[in-house]
Length: 94
Image (cartoon, rainbow, N blue to C red; front, side, top):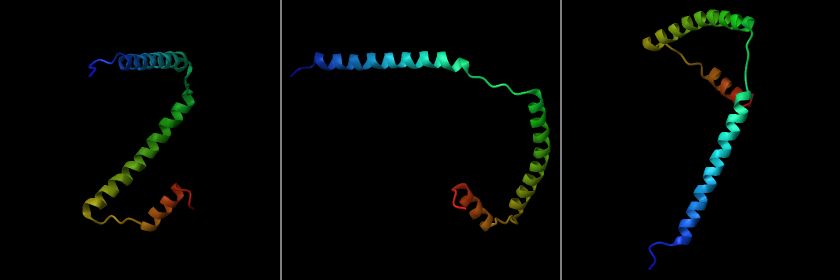
C-alpha cells in the first residue's frame, strides 16, 4: 500500500500552476482594458434628469400613498386583465 503517490501530487501541482497563470492573465486583462472605459454626461442632460425626477417623484409619491392607504383599508382592487395584459407584453405574446 502506497501512502504518497508522487504522480498524483505532481498532477495537483500542475493544476494549481495552471490556475495561477489563468488568474494572472485575468488580472492583466482587467487592468489593461477596464481603464479605457468611460462615460460623460452633459450638464444639460443632468439638469433635465433632475427636473424629470422631481416632477415624476411627486406624482409617484402621491400614487404610492394612495395605494398604501387602499391596501391598509382593504379596498385595493387588482385589475386582473391589466396584470395579464402586462405579463403578455413582457413575454412578447401580445
